[in-house]
Length: 288
Ligand code: SAM
Image 1 (cartoon, protein in one colour):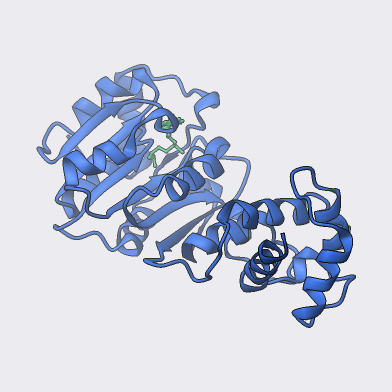
Image 2 (spheres, rainbow, N blue to C red):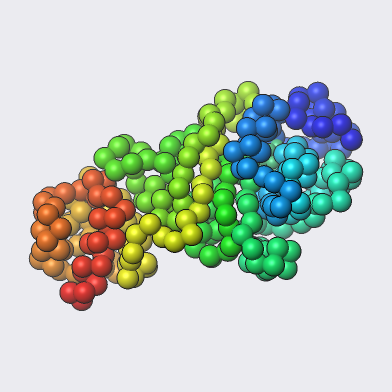
């Protein structure tokens, strides 16, 4: 089987199997070898690595991964792609094709059984409609992951990497940065895919922290604060927290905690760093 990372070979495979793209699965296949090289090098794949690929499509990136990794598990939801993958990956003995919805899969079990629980690397050209649940699922489930190198919508990559006080900064920035160090490694235009998506894309590498960068006594509360602050972006932080159901601190308690931190009572959530959100959460936990 020829390598797939170019339009001619991709079209040949699609025609051979009379494949119809399914919009509902976010199918945009990569057809640019330079982008594939970039992803593999950013993911820093070596022959020691066990790689989980989410959504292999017709196996374009999977072929690259099989060349560089010790073992690859490729999880694909579309049953019509399974016979294609069995064909395009037939010359590799280090790949397992799994027909599954990644959101329903027990990834922890896969890591335990196939990599003795050691940290895996995740690589994917993600279906954009479920980018956030996939990433947050991987982080929150505490699956043993070393890094996640993924193609996402460009704006989403910018939000993940954004710093306080910028327009892109929000709940996603803080959630991602609590677990990992984000780094955009490439911008990828629509013409690198078949069919072309309507949006620009970017490859971002999320290197998971061994230890969280901030100490927080109540993780759930921290995330509740973050969500409440950005739900009502134009409101002050105090109003955002005070109006949120599930957060029971009084206005005075919140203002007092902010003052102790040297922050004004009218500050907005978008001005706070992750460290400051954690401090606020810890201070209020102690009052409660
Ligand atoms: N990796 C291929 C490439 O780069 O050419 C395909 C990428 S395409 C953007 C996303 C892939 O994810 C599609 O093959 C799609 O069928 C698959 N997919 C969509 N939702 C999925 C899910 N919930 N679980 C597993 N795979 C999914």
